[in-house]
Each structure stands twice: as C-alpha cells, then as structure tokens.
Image (cartoon, rainbow, N blue to C red):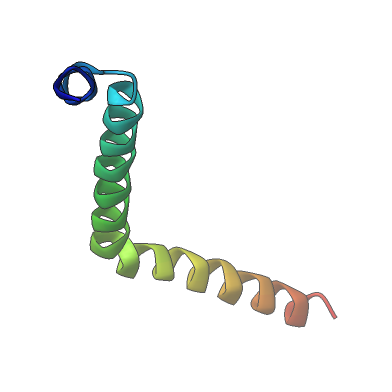
Length: 61
C-alpha cells in the first residue's frame, strides 16, 4: 500500500498537461485584459466602418 502511494506521488505523467493548462489560462487572462483595455478603440473602428458604409450607400444613389 505504501509503495502505491509513493508511486502516485512520484508519477509525473499529467505534469505536462497541467503546464499547458496553466499557459492557456495565462494567455486567456492576458487576452481578456487586452480586450477590456481596447474596447473603446475597437468599438470606434467598427463605428467608423459602419458610418462610412452607410454614408457611401446613401451618396451613391
């Protein structure tokens, strides 16, 4: 029984997956922080594109 517990503690089979999971979590947090920081700029870009498209369609007729 003690040998099985020691074997489980020393088993590093899932270590790589945990590391990949942590890396993905850090990237996700950084991406969310960047989107929150840039949301006004992103909204402005889409608003300008929308304004230009609606302005060009009304002036073409």
